[in-house]
Length: 336
Image (cartoon, rainbow, N blue to C red):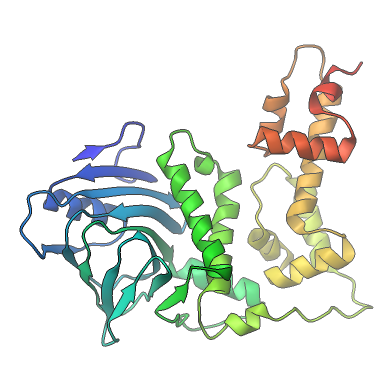
């Protein structure tokens, strides 16, 4: 087994990168990253050709997993929602008393938290994107989006189309996250980046996959009464101005405002003229500008100030800054 250079230690680590030919080590790695398991060879081989690149993002685990030979994997009950998106090859699986399913690069497989889970055949050479989602996180996010309690597990259909539309967009988002895991020095270690990504993965899955609440989520939110004072918007604005450097995402702001995500987005559109995250970015840009204008010669660098206020991609930051203020950050810093 090899644990890739630069990866944190396996035990309790948010990152795990493993390459191994040994079946027992493959069992350990899969259990460390996802679930306890039993793996059986379906044909004689000395090298199972296992590779895992996995990262923990709060309640979401994303990774790429592959095996080089045909295997059967048994997991019991997963205890979490799970989605597999093959990049190549396919898997054949079943849960509980459900029918056998085949998951391919065009159709993701969706696994429930309950029901004994078996991958009857992992075809040799299959590589897939794996997403494990903590049950409470997904159900809480659904309630935020709906603006009401649900009180029951989300009964997903066993698969959804990832060859086009929302499914393809969601699969691309997962792939981007996994690529960041595979590249040293990626941004996903930064809460300002990982928190919005978690929100996008949760919300995107709920909008892309089939389940009883999908139609309700897709409907436009009801308009607010004209005479209603949007106190929730005010609470969110106060939170942003009080801590603009905090890695807020829309779900957290909605919780602060005590409304659903959809209500907050619509409230900001009507009463602020932009989305909550766009407003947060605007406040951060203003804080950067204030700090650059106060700085003496040689006291600060643009990158240092931008990073302090939550901008981790300097190219995008510079473009947003120039569009907002009509000059570059360096020009602001160098002005008398």
